[in-house]
Amino acid sequence: MASVEFRGVGKYFEKGVPVLSDISLTVGDGEFLVLVGPSGCGKSTLLRILSGLTEPTSGRVFIGGRDVTDVPPGDRNIAMVFQNYALYPHMTVYDNMAFGLRMRKVPASRIREKVQETADVLGIGTLLKRKPRELSGGQKQRVALGRAMVREPEVFLFDEPLSNLDAGLRVSMRDELTSLHRRLSSTMIFVTHDQSEAMTLGDRIAVLDSGRIQQAAPPLEIYRNPCNTFVAGFIGSPRINFLKGEVRDGVCMTSEGSVPAPGIPEGRCLMGVRPEHVHPDSRGTFRGVVRFLETLGNEVIIHLDTEGDGLRCRCGPDVDAGIGDEMTFSLEPSGCVFFTTDGMRINP
Image 1 (spheres, rainbow, N blue to C red):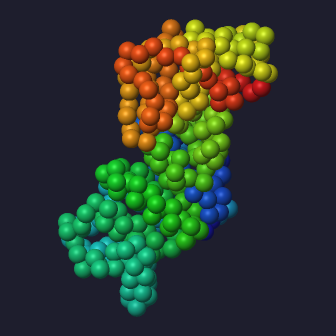
Image 2 (image 1 turned 180 degrees about the horizontal axis):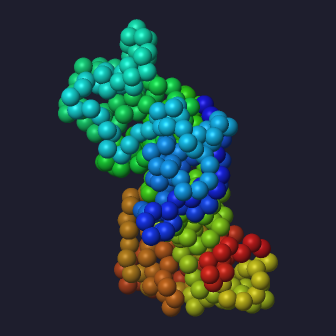
Image 3 (image 1 turned 90 degrees about the vertical axis):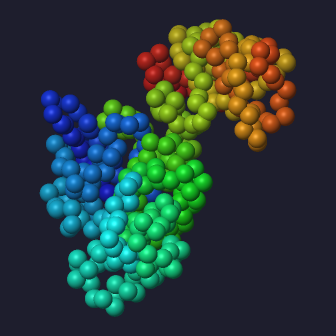
């Protein structure tokens, strides 16, 4: 186990276009950190810089307090699991898992012990004689994990390893990764563009956009207290509602209705409210027309046309609503967050 630290890391490619700009971030010893953001935000590049596969243009990288910026990848004592598994097709599962240990001249008896022990932990102990072509997607992912685990690295790096799996397997593998982290207490850094994976896996999430870290915090802190409209809009499904408004005398007035805004400075603003804080209410001051219903079994997401930009409302399965119905609804004031017109959070 080891901590990881990025100090002022930047990366520029051709024509001086910045991919990463002044990234400073510390990952604690034994922490599970998730790097999340849209495609092209720089999260995979940051992981490759940590692994040594890409050189930073500026800044330094530390693992366990040791400056590894100029250290070759093979000498950093890390293990990386990729999206495409990267298994050798001509080798058995056993040989795939043993390959890295053989390259390090580990005794054969120790290799057998480590491979069998790790395979049993991952539930692939009966698959050691098979070739990758004989495995399912979930089994291949376990082999890739096992190949990393047998090396007992200081840091595990995961580059969108679940992207090729179907929805059911993704949920199953999330559970296995969480259990694996608890068992090993290893430092893990996981890259994904899926905010659901980020929320369910990470001890802490770092949200990236345009090569910069927008916010790094525990999942619920990110969800409840986003630092700007990008983070608020990226994290959470269904997406947060944004309403243009103006605060006067402690009340935020919008085209849809009004809500108390104690402590918020007067003037124009953006108000954010999660769908679960929008409630059908016959005495509510907000009005809208049902445009679309997402019936999900345990809940219904109502999409409302309003005088403004529309709203999404998360309701129980028994809500009485149909397309074209006029509805009145209310917002929970405690669930409303406020931003400046250029997208920065306003704290009361």
